[in-house]
Each structure stands twice: as C-alpha cells, then as structure tokens.
Image (tube, rainbow, N blue to C red; front, side, top):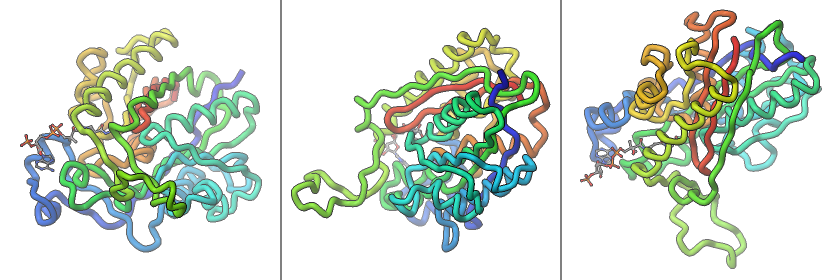
Length: 325
Ligand code: UT7
C-alpha cells in the first residue's frame, strides 16, 4: 500500500513586521526579556487583504505549484485554524472558492497549535484509502486579531501566517510511517480563547473578558516540554526508528526554550531541529507548515530523509509523526 507523502510545500506571510523594539513602546517589556525567554525577535501582523483564508490560499497556491498539481485535481482541503475571519463557512470552503478547487470537499480542524499535525493525520487516512487522492493540508492563523495588546505576557508571543502542503500517494518508501495524537480536555483552562459573546443573554458567561488568547504560561510551558517529548518517544518506538537516524525535526514553534529541550532527553542533536520562531513568533497551526516550507526551499530535505514532526497546543492537544521524505 502506498504511503501518504508530501508532494509540495508553500507558505504565505503578511507583509508587516512587528519588532520587539516596537513592542517596547506598547507594553512594559524589553527586547532582552522577549529574546531570552522566548527566542522571538519579530513577528508578522496581517493587514487588509491578508485575512486567514487569503493567507491560506496564498500558501496553497505555492504548494500546488511545487507539486505540479492543479486546483481541479484537489479532492480534499483541510485547514487547521482557530482564527478564520468567518465562523461559517469554514476556512477550507473559503480557500476552495479562492483557488478554484471545484472538485474538493472541505473542512476545518480546530486543534489549536496541533491543527496542522492533526490535519496531516486525517489526510493520511483518506490517502491510504485512495492513493490517487490529492489533499491540501493547510495551517493558517490570524492570531493578532485575538491578542490582548495590553497583556505583555501574551502579546509578545504570537504572529500571523499560513503554510500548506499537497499530499498524495508517495512513490516507493516515501510518506508517513506513523503518527500518534493525544488530547487532554481537562486542562483547557490553562490555554484558551473565548468566542465572541453569546447573543443569548442567558448564555453570556459571567467571567467573559473578551475574545482573547489567555494562557497560564509557566504551566503550559512545563506540560508542553513533557508532552512533546512523550509524543516523539512514542512515535519513534512505534515505528522502530532510532532518534539518531532522524535527519530533521519540524516542531511547532512556540518558544526557543521548548525547542532546545527536545535535544537532551531525546538524543537528537540541536542542528537537526529546524527553528524560525525568531522571525515569526508563535503562529499556532501555521508554524509547522511554514517551517517545513522554509526548510524544504533551503534544501534541508533530501529524498529518503526521515523527518519528525511534533506539536503541542491548546486543548491540550499534542502529538508527533515520522515521515520518509
Ligand atoms: O503554542 C503552544 C502553547 N504555548 C506555549 O508553549 C508557551 C508556553 N509558555 C512560555 O513560553 C513561557 O511561559 C512565557 C514565554 C509565556 C513566559 O516565560 P516565563 O519564563 O514562564 O515567565 P513568567 O510567566 O514566569 O514571568 C516571569 C516574570 C514575571 O514577573 P515577576 O512576577 O517575576 O515579577 C512576569 O510578570 O516576567 C514578567 N513578564 C514580563 N516581563 C517583561 C511577563 N511577560 C513579560 C514581558 N516582558 N513581556
């Protein structure tokens, strides 16, 4: 049976850059604090014409061009997002219209920062059932729209952007070897974002503080380190892959200290961990496909390489996947 492989990658970032120096003028913070605690130097902020679905469509077009797959050949569109400009229709339907993928069905996945990883896993199941199917898997976010710009503990962290892949049945050994996904909804309160207030007065929550991302940073940090490591250990054991044979790790980009922690216990050397959090901050579901696209275009991936993906996000959701490029 053919494995589900990535046939092309693409990404799309807003034009405007917001630097740490600019944030120093907005809240009581410093470039030094942000750099030491997070590794972030700047992030992108969406403007007019750069809504979530537009960024997603831009990334999708680039991934299709690289894969040599036309819009009409796409059979399924999956978008990992929690910040689409519309609640209905789905971001995936807006992308379908934007790129003209008239033969696709379309759905969103909300698994916060793990949305792209969850999306790849769903795509894999469909492709195993029909290796001729071409699937667009996209991670796209406009987190700046849901950031409390007066809260220094969160506003320094997030950015906007989108990344995409085209997936389909791979040649030979190429494709996803296996993945492991997890969730723990009992910890939702440590990292969450309320929806717009209910229009039913009886259902307006008493503790509603606006539709912003709220996070218990330290607790999330500790759990993220443990959970990402655990996901990686489990998927490598499941697929009988030795850590040293992994060529490149594409992790969710939340914090440089979380990424550095992946090296120690896992036996994966630091230069194998792809990092671009300094340029874009935490773009949630978009961070892994943006990182993957950059690594791919920089020539960091060669046919036959083993690539490891790992993510952690609100929910909590987390997991890991291993793929032969
Ligand atoms: O995307 C997936 C989920 N998200 C994550 O994985 C993020 C996980 N968490 C983190 O990355 C880190 O917890 C943060 C970067 C958010 C915060 O770093 P920390 O080392 O955990 O700092 P802290 O929250 O313990 O705060 C330390 C101090 C506090 O001051 P006091 O109480 O010690 O006087 C904060 O008020 O730093 C203060 N602080 C700031 N100072 C300057 C908090 N934010 C800032 C800021 N600038 N922006």
